[in-house]
Image 1 (cartoon, rainbow, N blue to C red):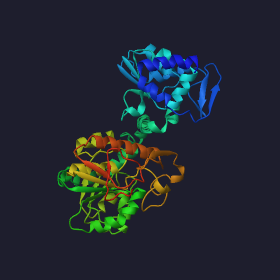
Image 2: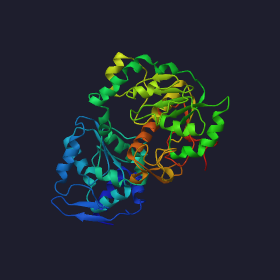
Image 3: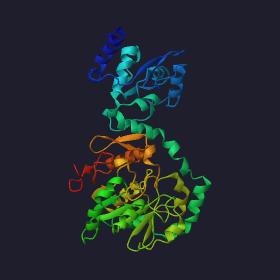
Image 4: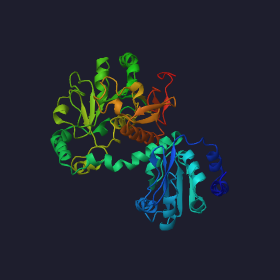
Length: 431
């Protein structure tokens, strides 16, 4: 055991013995490690450079500048080489700097190689494994290299960090000042003014079970049974997302409510034929001609997006929860209609079996499965391919479920992403 590790380990054992015991139990890092020379030598792990090798301190200062200097609590995700921790301790008024380990084996490598006892011994430092907390803490800085190198045990927190970092970029298309957004709102204004408020549906199904049907690949296995169930006089409320309507109709399944929010939806996805017995719930920006062709009742609402801030003042309507995916308002509608038990179908947030959706060809509803480079854990604890936006949709649904303890949520497949907060319905879910 090196003198460096003995000094680092002594501080860890004194301050956080439980963390030290976990670190000692970590398997050796399974990635190649290379020392990169330069004005500020650094490590390359699996081809990922941990820090700048030109000026590590200046890099850390830029990272620290993104955090509020007057915040009493700061959070650093990833341990790096200790540079950001040192800068924060020297330059901020924080009472506590929480350091969250994203890769235990990587931190062990650093502890064995470089002196870290200076910042570890500072009483303002708290050290945790990131996954010990179910949710990310704000304000934070996540070290970019360790968002890539995060180990599997900390993957859920890693996904939340990545999603949070991307929020600003992801919201750019919804800028209310964008001319195309203004055009889409203006073309639908007459229907917005004449169609009833979605609030008219709230509380109308109190205590009823609801099935919320999305378009993930796992929906396919349930279609025959859903068809039989849909024809019973006493059955759950059936709410589907817009892209699920076509595969459901092909099976002779007529949902009670269809939810649509995307201005890219066309009559190919939302055919108006034989729609008289189905209710359509939508958000503004959808093509007015498409909406006008719907034969059944229509209800309109908003999301919390600034996109609707001005128009909401002119035409008040109730709000549905939207966080990127149409499944969010479909589930929120079920909750607000009064459902006490919600069962999800096709809510995969992933590409089980290397398929993207039920009833649509690969790439019809978005990127092809072949370009997916990300993963989540499925219901069996295995990795399943996905894409970044699906991971963000999953995260926001899990947060929504936490906020609604009065509702029981069930999933019907282990093939897609594990949705924390749901139970597997034993009557629908294969082992």
